[in-house]
Image (cartoon, rainbow over all chains, first blue to last red):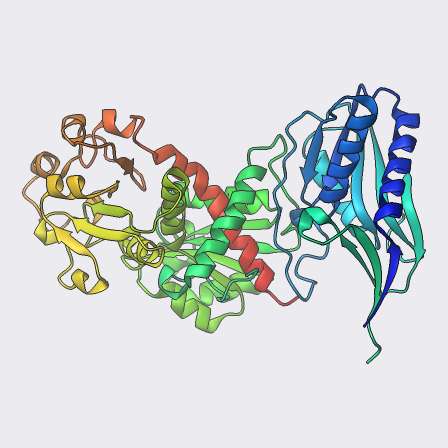
Length: 182
Length: 309
């Protein structure tokens, strides 16, 4: 197994700051905007984005957590079943601008499921996708992000590993992991 | 653990404690789903489920049907009262015919104990036992224990009294298995004629005095007197039963503590439980009904997960 560092702690923070500036450019005062982090791993990034936005705007944006397990199209087709996580959306999304946040965009299937899951809570006015790592050329579905932290060329057998201190890691880092060929 | 250890839900006896915990955790998520504006998820959209009821049922059948529809499964219903069973068709023939129509899962209620076991050995589909005679009613026990857990967090060391017609009750047997697996202490209470002779072998306490049972327990699960199974005289009259084994407000208030009151339904109001108790704050009867849908969604979802695509 080979591990290559894509983003170190400093670069990761700079990237978050840049993503937040891009959001501010488009959403101005965030009057009608809500954030939704995708379970399980997009939630850590979503909390960071919310925190940074609070520092910049002095305003706490509503943040929801969305689990897509029951909406996935690969139920019974995966080797290992996925365990459901909590969905907590304590606000109305009807007519809101929603920013969906996930850490890695790969095949696009999670985002497809997320769109489906989100509709169960109402009809948003607009949905945008923010992703930290965009694995280019690996999409199964025509889904593209609106905000990208870093685009990375990968092959299917590689994996992007995101480590957050919130999860118990020593520092925030993003790695590209290549498994040895069998 | 993300998967059940069994391919069918035939009884609580076959489940491990981890299986029960997994069903509860999954039901927590489904409970959240059924309280949303859109109460439906697409998980089982490629699965067809047959509800085969050889015995009358209102709430179990409705609850299963609702659970299946909320998971987006295709549902077919069958009840024996207006079917070819009346013309002499066997159980296996009936079910095989239904399966030829490409059914993936079968939810079955039958008056013969072991009917679900028999079916699981003979057909390919996943079987969910919705009650087999006086044997087991696993989803009822799961929703009962889930409802208690919701009220008092952990069942470990808690005392549960099951009061009423233990002899004819599949709910009692499944409840005993589930409660014991989750670490609770169980007492059964009822007239001596309605308590099976060897029930003590399951590790439960026995009492013939409702007052003693109520003073001992944290939770009282009042069972229905199964009027349809009372051809033999197990007790002199309903009035006498109600006098000696009925739970009323006076009896409840005479206790030094507040206990949780449950009933699997349908209730014979004024026989095993009085109306004011059934509708009181201590009663969680309607929570049981709500949790039934979430528990059944969890069971069907987890069994579908075990199916090879």
